[in-house]
Image (cartoon, rainbow, N blue to C red; front, side, top):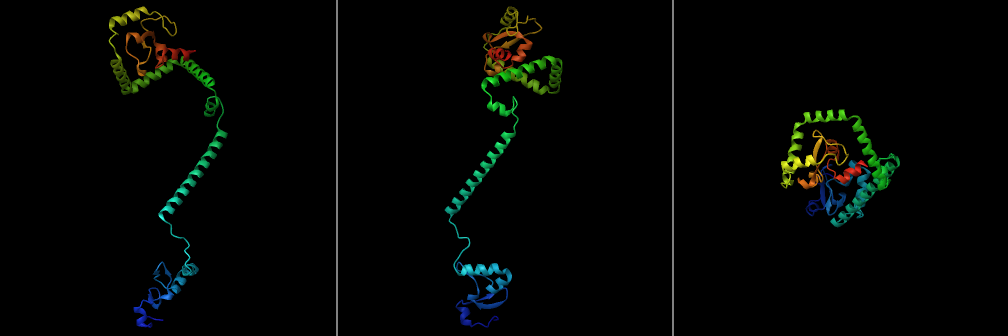
Amino acid sequence: MQVGMIDRHTRILGKSRCCPTCLTEKPTAHFARFDGYFNKACSACRRIKHGDAARKADARRAKGIVKRPYKTREQIAVDAEAKRQARKAKSAAAKAQREAARSASVPKWKGSKWWYGHATAVEIAAYRREIAARSRAYYAETVQHQRARTKRYKWAHPNVVSRHHAERQQRIEQADDGTLTPRSLASLFNSVTTCPYCDKPLRPAIATLDHLTPLARGGRHSLYNVTVACGDCNTRKGIKTPLEFMWAQA
């Protein structure tokens, strides 16, 4: 049926539509209707273009069946949260499976991550003392090499050395209580004849001033917080207290 062949009264009442695909004016019964609106193309053109999918869709719409019903915002939020929780559960299960596989293949020798997780505090302390003893022995064997390497590093990084000295001087100025005068320091150096840590006789060339409670840990730059020790012990003591240092040497 061509354009103009339908009664004009029918077109006015809205009972016919013109299909833009076949350019044919047809009754509205030839157009699929969904949610109160007509499709632009007629059902015949849609079947030609889309095949069985369009025919099945038209049949479902004619019966009032919607394949994917509309959801409210609350339903969409609930479904999204359920999917999120499912993804989290799946991720947690995969992570637990990876951890189980990793724990089955991790090395179990002394000092490994697995060993630290299963060893007692006494075993860990003994192992750390063993490591410290090995480190001291290695340093004693290669002391000249270690000193040369330190000297090269200081020569190559003067800014690091100057910053370290500036920070230490600032700590000394902040912690100074005025009791360490040149006279009191001279008296202290003359009164101490042996190193309190290794009992080595002190000579002016190796005697150094040691803070009992280190400045880095809040110690005071005071006559009551210093002693005289040899340079080796003072260097190895670092930021330890005397008790911690003697315990590390044991």
